[in-house]
Image (cartoon, rainbow, N blue to C red; front, side, top):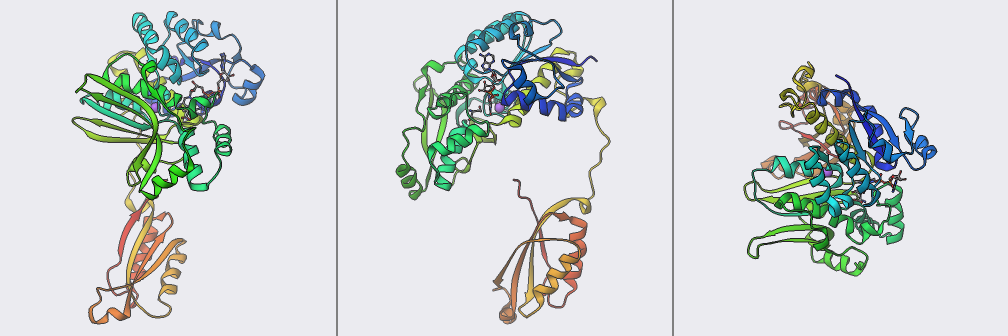
Length: 442
Ligand SMILES: NC(=O)c1ccc[n+]([C@@H]2O[C@H](COP(=O)([O-])OP(=O)(O)OC[C@H]3O[C@@H](n4cnc5c(N)ncnc54)[C@H](O)[C@@H]3O)[C@@H](O)[C@H]2O)c1
Ligand SMILES: N[C@@H](CCO)C(=O)O
Ligand code: NA
């Protein structure tokens, strides 16, 4: 089947990520979508600059208005940001009968009602997963995965730039301005970073989630918005001493008692022990409470070129499946098209690679550790950490034995088992060795 042809509006950070990930993963994406997804053309304000950043493999021009109407374009991808030109281009694309995928939360929070209505009338889809919490599939979760629930509340760290600033200030004692500059260099910040710092970007995202969660039109103009610019270092410190972290949260809640919805963005103290309090840097996390499921926490990269591209392209796959709307091209049960399933097999455990935690009860005498580490070294198993602790289970012999905990780096499980057999056979190893697997999940 002919590949889907994309028209890309904009050639900045996110567009660069989309071009890169589409090229790198094209075979995998085709297996999922059922057909190829190709960039037919890019529209950029500065064509030479765009060619420099996107490379020669994609045709680049500067006529945005013509691109959204071109008959050979199947899907328009809006990545310019802002609410004015983006609005008119998206409405023009819809009028031309083209589905649109956008990362633009400002556009949807402000003009969403008009855009969704136009799309409904014209019968085209609008994909906007990238607009909220970047690479985290939160729109999909709210719209599909949690569709059985009455959503009670959503609270999220949904602005990477401000979370990055707060984290770096707290952990490294860096100044606000220094960290903001770093966030801009890393491609996290909005074109006007005041949108991040003053909480407006988080409010755009909270507005979109609120509408989806509670089935209302977007109500950005009613959101309460406070950013982090007035937050003082002393308060961050005191909060710490009391066992709290301060995070900029976007919050929306159902308030059945008064027949309303809360929608607010502000710095918030959270008990330091909560998972969400430990979300650092540009990472985002969204806590959703539903009446049936309870609390679910959705965590991942909320900003940056490739994480955002991940969400844009997921929408492109969805829209491609919709365009080809016969039953075989709906969301496949196993995510891949049935005729594209691979014969790749699950590996035997001995061929898997992981790190290990070993606990050995050993005689407390010279040379024991050296013998053990030699066995590991012979199999190129490298040690991450060693901890020795008195063994209190040893009864009468307790004074002469000790617990040795060894953490290893990643290794083949087969090699580990061979080393363990040799270690276990040593006379100085006094009890069966405990072996656990360890994953850093970094
Ligand atoms: N960077 C991220 O991490 C991230 C994450 C999620 C969503 N977004 C959203 O994605 C969109 C793009 O963000 P980005 O970070 O790639 O921005 P960017 O500034 O890097 O790129 C924007 C591109 O659009 C062009 N542009 C801007 N205004 C234009 C106009 N009026 N007409 C024509 N071209 C115009 C710019 O020249 C640039 O090439 C924004 O809506 C942003 O909010 C960004
Ligand atoms: N400026 C935004 C980009 C992702 O939407 C942020 O920092 O989270
Ligand atoms: Na998302």
